[in-house]
Amino acid sequence: MATQESQHESTDQAHTGRRALLGAAVLGAGGAVLGLSGTARAAGAGGGGGVRSLPVPTIIGHRGASGYRPEHTFGSYQLALDLGADIVEAGDLVPTKDGHLVCRHEPEIGGTTDVAQHPEFAGRRTTKVLDGVSTTGWFTEDFTLAELKTLRAIERIPANRPHTTLYDGRWEIPTFEEVLKWQDEQSRKRGKQVWIYPETKHPTYFRKLGLGLEERVAKLLRKYGKDKRDAPVIIQSFEPTSIQRLNKLVDNPLVVLLSSAGSRPWDFVENGDPRTVADLVTRKGLREIAGYAQGIGPTLDLVIPKDADGRLTTPTTLVRDAHAVGLVLHPYTMRNENPFLPAEFRKGTDADAYGDSFGAFQAYFATGIDGVFTDNPDTGLLARADFVNR
Image (cartoon, rainbow, N blue to C red; front, side, top):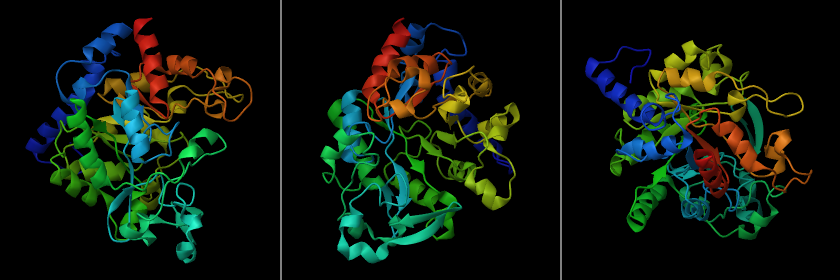
């Protein structure tokens, strides 16, 4: 795909084809732009191959089935598949001291592993500045892979998911290479292609440490033959320059993640680019993203903002504007628990109680989004069935 730099014509043509392939979820398979009925949208997604084979709206298991198992473990990934997720977000990629890629939500692992219970690693606890934020804990880049493999995953938000703490200590930290092997194994066992949706985490931060992520991701994808435009691996990042770098290294579908409107991607901060996410979701910004990526992953608030009371207001034009330039939208993150739902869909005040997540799914599906990340893929699939058959 084209970037701001000049590209050879043949490269431009190949990348345009990639954009069209992922865009099929909107223009050919999804029907959101064409105004097809919900049933037609889902049925149309079954034809062809590659991304065309994904149902619309696509249900993406966020860090696996992280509403039921500690996130970024094979227990969570496996359950997401068992529950029927169309894609598994496996995983958020961070490096080890010796250059391996592992799956953790953040490089700081004090909240997602039992590292604090390992006295041999007490001296590794430190404070670092991560994307401008002072953060204290244990960091993957200070551990070898062998050391990380002695740790076990724990529930990240036990106040909201006390039931998931039952599984604390059961699973180790997976590597990205193990995920790629698992993907092939599961595809064979299930008789259908398993899709994954990895993310490069804090790429500017790690590049400064000499642990560039994109080259490591590309090397592994090439090793397993998954660096092609029809490969069942969609790569995402909150840093547009990371996606631009990947665009030159692999032919996979690429997605730019977008946080709150007033925020700035950290690579923009480092590079002196004054633009915010609000600038990126303008028609001009979306056209630029479409030059090197095939989709965006906006926060749900960019699709339907909330008022001061936390209730949904009027949808923005983001879905329409993104579709107009051929981008698909996979916003994040739907969760069943009250604190994570819009106020009108909450039931009671308990932090771990489920609200009317089905109602919230319907509200977001109605905007024409092409898929959604959810910690509860089974809920998402039932909500999709309700939506397409209504």
